[in-house]
Image 1 (tube, rainbow, N blue to C red):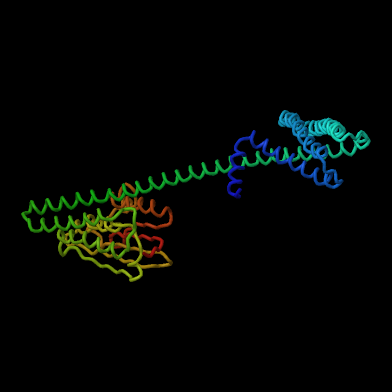
Image 2: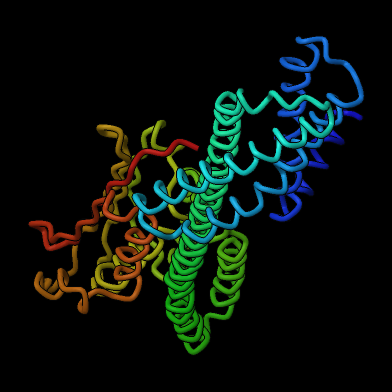
Length: 376
């Protein structure tokens, strides 16, 4: 038989407690018979049918008397340790005595020797030793099975805990992604309404060519927006290209009133940021600066890497009227786009980011965003 076959056989036996008990009984008493055969029968050159029959018959009787011993151990298993020890020792001594009497009687009947009773003490000692070994194996195997059972329960609990943790993490990830998508998709309708209103104004002003141009630009920008997953980050260089699509639309609206001043360092161009992060900032300046000032204004954007952080600063020259700083810094005072920027960054970076919105001495707004540097 191969080792693999034996292992499979043992596994099938160990799955059934009754089969396992009898399998171990067979192994133990076969070993006892083998030791008795080698150390007594062969050692004293008593190789005949009578002595060989006695060797195997005494083991068979030993198996029979181990059954009540097994029953006693099972009955007192859940009692206190002192009762178990007392009952176990008493039972072993009693069973060993009975087995010894039967062993000696069998020996006399099979071999015809009747002087063996004078050696009863030695026979009794060996019986006690064998049954104490049997009791030791029984308790050892029983405790091993309990240990394995507890280990399996522990592994099952750990597996359930890990599964539950993975489910929670998966649920949190799904919720986080859904929140990011929700925040991202709130931006497009807001921007879309403003642009459609502008196109409608151009049509009412009978500027059909400009309205058509803005419609094409809007189509390109929306296509770019739909093609980019809000969960992903893109390099600042590509974000600026998307920003140019948006600014082309605004250039159509405001013409020379819109002035831009971009200063982007080379290392910052490769830094990853959430897609379409800057567009609502520009849109906010358009709404509160360019649109409110007949002379227009300048929108400045700078990007650089400082202390392993990507620092983005977007500012404008301000409108003609005074800006209410308390309204600007309140959550409810900001537009949908600015509120969503803060919430979106919170969802993506937790607390590992900075977003400040301040009023410049000239009356303009200054947005400062600091993100962990992530080079794509």
